[in-house]
Each structure stands twice: as structure tokens, then as C-alpha cells.
Image (cartoon, rainbow, N blue to C red; front, side, top):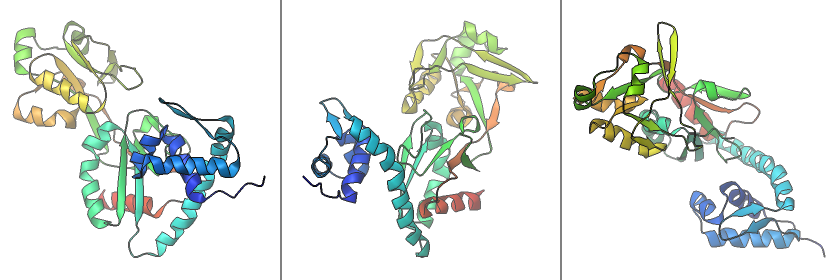
Length: 302
């Protein structure tokens, strides 16, 4: 039996479901119904005469045929998008969707100073932000660009400095905690204190890093609270304000409490400074008009 040539929209549906790992998540990201996506996949499988996805109540995974199709399909569809996007350069104002993958700290501390002005300047562009702390292939995730810190950039990426060019990690505690337990004079003193820790989604719990006069020290302190990434870090800050222990976080994150005195600096001469984040994107592909507009906005605001 001769197969029917599949529709481009159905191929896009397959890529969306496979990338999201399920119909519901793909529907949420694409702002369409899961039933519409499901029907598109059924139609595509009928057209090609082969099963492309294994479906269960818990997961959706590509079959061998689906995996091989997706391996070729992703780059091909991105080229189609890039070709269509060329038309965008002839518009007075670019339009479309800009998808960015950023660390949670960047979403909370850096983008609020950038996005409002960008959205006001480019009202026809819709911005979608995915905030996570794991390093991902931005293209495989369907994003146009990512934002990361310098040590986590891939070699084949173009990097654009974004936001503050230097940031610091700050260590702080409530006055009541320090009055009861004493003030650490050296990073190693933290081993005798209650410290409020953060853990990445991967399960890794990074050491606290300090630097002074060229000396770098890593400390793995213990404490009564460990929180995951994102908004959960605000629980650690709240616990520190309540006097439950010492917190170690981006200085900008703690700044409101340092300013009002509910937290006071600890080991300030040892606070480590590091380079601010970069916007990065692959140099081997045509830059979408929406991303080019964002890059121009960042450079104009620097």
C-alpha cells in the first residue's frame, strides 16, 4: 500500500511530543490540546505505516523507527523555521516566539532588568523562558538560545555578555544566630555551624567556595536544611532570617535582607567574585530575527 506524504504540522507534533516526553507537557508548551497532538501522531503513523511512539500511562518514548526519524527530523524542521524566518527580516518589527533556557538564578536576578524593556520595544515577540540548573542542548530542547555562566559554555557556541559582568556569592546569618553561636572568622569555622544548603536537581550538592588573597577554599558544611533549586531557595533564606543557620547564595538574592539588617554579612572578605552570565547560541545556524532583536537589545543596554 502506498503511503501518503505526511503533513509538516504532524511532523512538528511528533518532534514536540518527543522533546517534551509526553502529550500533556507538549500541549502545555505549544498551547494546544493533548487530543490534537495525539490525533496528529496517529495520522502520521498511519501515513507512514509504522509506529513511531510507544505510549504508556507514565511515559511516551520513540520506537526505533521513531528515534531514527527524529534524529533527522529535528535539524530539518529547524532549517525550515530558519528559512521562513528570513521573511521576518523584511518586517518593520520582528514577530514570533523567542525561546530561552536559563539558570534559575538568571531568571530571578538578571532577566527582570532586561525583559521588560525588550518586551516594550518588541511587542510582537512572545518570550518563553525555561528556567533550570542543568546544562542542556538548547536546540534539542526547542530553544533559540540559552544563558549560562562562562565555565559551562560549550566551545562551538557564540557567547554574548549579558547582565552584570561580575557577581558574588554572599554568606550571611541573622544577628540572633550569630549572638547565640558566634561569628565564623574563617571558612573552615563553618564546619562547626548550622548551614542551610542547596542541592541541584541532579542530586549534586555543591561545596561552598571562598577566595581571599589568592587562596581558594572549598567547604562542605552540615546543617538542618537542604533545599532544591528555584523558589525553594527562598525557604533557605527565610530560615536564615529566622535564625536557623547560615546561608550562602548570590549577593543579589540576599541583598534586601542585608540592606534591612535581618541578615548580616559573614566572612565578607572571602566572598568569591565570578563573571556574570552569557547568552549563547550555535554559530552554525542562521540567527532567528527574534533572537537577533534580543541580542541587539542586550548590546544597546550594556
